[in-house]
Length: 507
Ligand code: PHE
Image 1 (cartoon, rainbow, N blue to C red):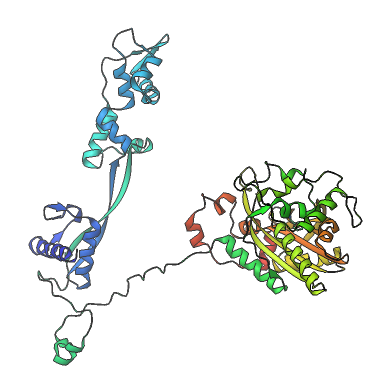
Image 2 (cartoon, rainbow, N blue to C red):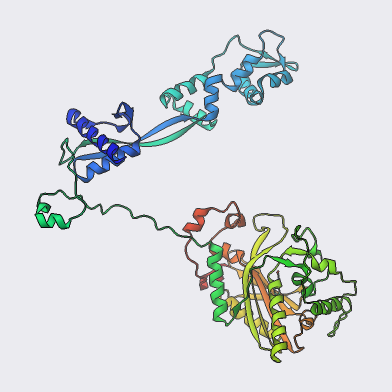
């Protein structure tokens, strides 16, 4: 390549020596052939760095025939095919026969042939209107194939619209002699060496100039997805509030931990195929803390701890079913059970604050605001004698740190919390209150079977990670944020995330 490039450089110099100028490198021949413009530019840059030549860019347009255009250039346009397939005379042909003869081109071809007044309809048959036709489309395409251009701008426009041709931009160069023009290339030294200093040759050596305009190599690296940036902000908020992170590396969960442990009855609609993804293989698990499972069964069937339960026959089969977790509350239920186990070992309950941020799955119809998978941000505090006032206080603090100051609560229902509250925030842009999260106090029917004492209360809340991310990065369609339509450049280009005050007013 380098040697070849030097030969090309010499050829350029010789040409300039003879002709004074290269008008357009497009027409410049090397070894009898046109030169790739990028290769030509490489040679030019070498020569320019030695001030041997100067050059200017020329922007050219070139028209290329597409695959479909090529086919037409060879075999004729759809409309000509239709015309040729219709026999001369009044007999004509039926549309069915025409389609059989011409194939899929028949439909578009007919339209055009009618428009050109080449054919008309006689009863249910198509007949020729004229004795012969001129297939202009084919002729035009042939011209463009040969010359990469056409004298009529409208023809170009029309063929482009029909996707028969497309335009290519090409840069070429005009070249003239530079200050230090010569037909021999002196090899330039890139470094001053020990030997040059020793023997004094450095005085006569021609040194290669530094190119201060050369762009550095783009550093290669990974890019954080916007969701991961916003997640990091949420993590910091939780850490500032003294929370610890729960392990969430478990997309597959048993129905037991995702639903039953949360006192969600087995007939609950959320447990249907329509709402939840079930695993096929393996479809079930049989690993449970059996004593705890029995207490959960009892609570569902008969109640206890002041509850009358649901009064139905609880099925072990149902609880064994493996699913993709539908919420991160399954992670919280694991953690609360672990805390109860620790209490058994230590003889004392230790208050705790935990959070998690990870992916959950729901069998939803995908649209602009819903995906079958999304991320949840979830936190809980377990301590003695907590009440709803604590929950409201913590939520105010949490959302304030996110930059959301105006929040309101609305009574809601979750099978595992009582009371439950939806969290709304005022959206100045929409001038309305929008739902931003869900919260509540975990029910005794959930906590007591785990072994937690009566006066240990747990306040908890959850929200999606997608919603604040979409607001923060002004993304309207969730499918642009996550999934196969997500643009990698969007991920590379979007800025770092700070959940500052302003966002609250935007939310
Ligand atoms: N699990 C609830 C959801 O998926 C959120 C939530 C978490 C509600 C904790 C109350 C308490 O929407």
